[in-house]
Image: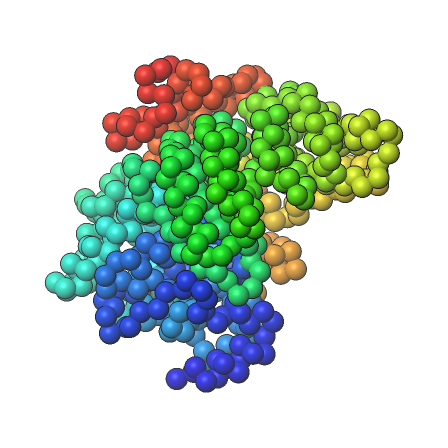
Length: 619
């Protein structure tokens, strides 16, 4: 009914290609042959969502299934939203421009806590009740997964069920149960009860939370007998042969990561104590060089991308990386296809690879020391030294690199002024090394120092720590801004107010649901975009809901406190996290278990220990 209007509207907004669909390799099916429709929803704009690997995997996997049609939907930018509301156009999918309220499922990807208001806004634009308890039989099931789903509670009242862990297998199990339920008939509640039989599915409506007088959680318990007390995450067992797309969609416009992605392994055992991904994506599972080489060839042939990124949490830890790079470089030589590594460790091996991959144009190097002193790097278990950085940078400058980015965190547990000073001092040492290599000249040198504020995350050794109060974070940013004076060094920082809100929702509970709706009603959305972030409106929402944000962000927890995510089993033993936290406070390192003894993180408990990278060297 609105397709003719839509053509005119799309032509009048900025970046209209966000809403067109029909890109190369996008999938189009005859709806007469479709039994189940799934809207894969990313709560941010097209160019952000289309850069996310997870949604690409699920899109192509689902569309391989007979009778199943997965389409994409992204958050419309503010100009498009305004025009849609003026013309009473509901939120629609890209492939068929259908209202997403007509789908069977809407599946949200939860990558970032500051996208939560966009989820509320997208539901509202769809004409779907915000609260799961208010949805009727004709409404789609609203599901969510991704890293933020490991603490699902701040969204508990809006999501029908969460997928905890990796989705390639569980999504097909969901489809099979849905087909059976749809054929046999039944209520929404009947379907949700059937879903309790699937490992990794959390249905918040089947659980109730009781609170202590001091506002902490007393217990979380199931309300029905079918609901498990613990929801265990899903892990892909056969990572070598698990489905991986090769016909990636090629967008009409530039996106954030405008390249093809080749996932070489999943998981990380480095054990950085602030890093949630390094904990929740355990264990490490790798693909063989042969499999990766075949996938790379298919991707390049079917997409025409000029860059192929070798993706993982720590790419240079792939044990056969040198062999893989040489094989792919030989294969694509003369085809105009570049290889890239998204992250580098501060070591000579990584630098050698960078030199091989950037033989024509040295675009820049990025390192993440994370902390300004060796003491604090030991606290966070970073496992690199200042000498590692100096040696790598000296070799890089000698090889012709001129652009360097350094990433740090401020507000880490036990941080002192000396640690802050170490950040500024390290930037000065980079300049000194460059001048030493270039006969005293700084010509061409560009050093970018970026700091983000520490956010304590669930399932990390720092999940019990308090975030620095806002005034402290701002003071630390000002200190570095005033301290870093060299013209060759640029200092960037992430807004402390956004990090504060991220910390609130990272460790929040169900009582934040009402705050989320109140903030959205006040106009909060696209909170991850600085030009749209309305911190004052958020603080109004907290006050009106009688919820203290500092209770969640700036309060240190005791080990025996019941945490909002304690009924989720991420495969990481709580005793391991406690041990790691205590070691952090002593500045003690934990070695990578792939090369040393098992650190007893607990992942061996999942499915009989078949995944542990080092199961025979038990601590």
